[in-house]
Amino acid sequence: MTEGKQALYGNYLAGQQWRQKLAKKATHMALDIPEDDVQITNQNQTGMGWKELATIGAVMLGLGWAWVFHASAPSTAPAVPDSEYNVRFYDAQGQPIEVPRLPPELRQ
Image (cartoon, rainbow, N blue to C red; front, side):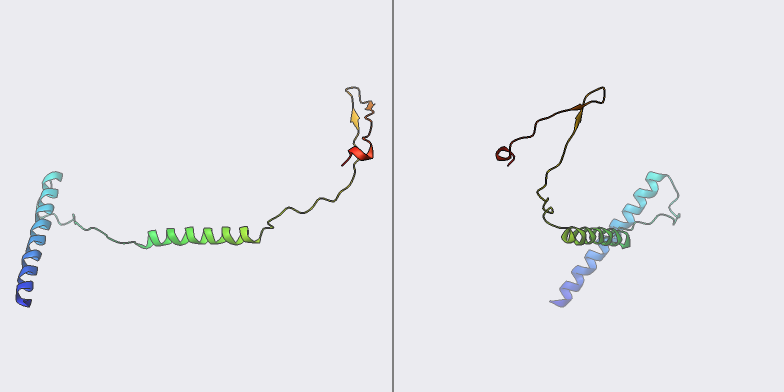
């Protein structure tokens, strides 16, 4: 059984090599360069490289900082003390306008 697998793998490897050779030949013909020019490589990268990992790390670091600062912020606004203010209104000439105060029973 093992010998059959080795033979199949050999056939698969030969097919892959033939595909790579054909792709290289097609590239040379498309770019109109001689066959013996070795500057063209057909390499595909799979997986994440250092740039992708650095980007993910920066995003995670930013999200962590945002979570820390969001968690430390107070969840409710501080209570405003109940107090009265004297508000003055003025007309266009700068004269004060008298506004009557509300009676105590209507102030609440």
